[in-house]
Image 1 (tube, rainbow, N blue to C red):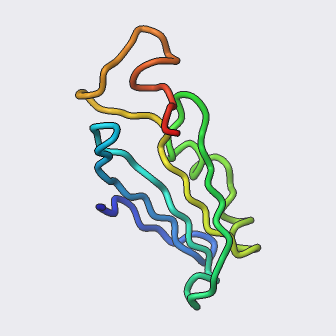
Image 2 (image 1 turned 90 degrees about the vertical axis):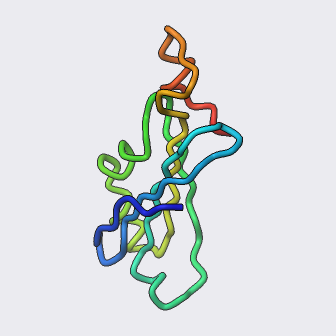
Image 3 (image 1 turned 45 degrees about the vertical axis):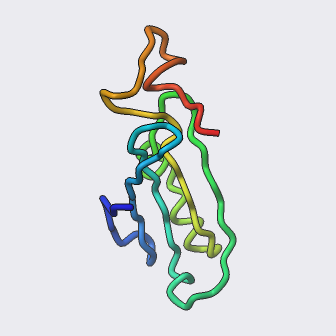
Length: 105
């Protein structure tokens, strides 16, 4: 797993990672927000957010503003990109199939 982004955010850290998915046959991204309470090693709840069709992890971490609330309440956020992407991914004409479609689960 490779860390692509690491930024301070509301006292915690917003990271983005890339990993190879053997199941999907391509690289996938996942964003993880660690609130300030994570620094102490405390056990914290985790919220997994699966973005909708054609969205990436970036849509959520840049537009939702959830990090502020996660920091306040001590919640870890895990936000995977739900769609396979890249030139080696089969594509289709429709927006709901192929590279932009979200069938991660």
